[in-house]
Length: 70
Image 1 (cartoon, rainbow, N blue to C red):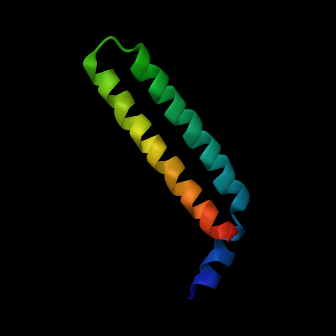
Image 2: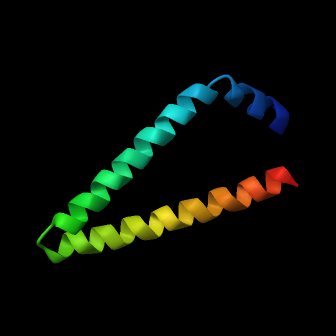
């Protein structure tokens, strides 16, 4: 199976991936809010890790989008 076949196969589930993306963003936001409101140091460390992961994901999505638009 080549790359075109894989992409066409995934396009059938485009709506599902969009909904899962929204749920993932909401989950990240809840974790970040929970970390900021935590009184312990573990919550703050978790928040820093999640924020770094979110920034890495945003950068990766930006690079992929930039490459696809060329």
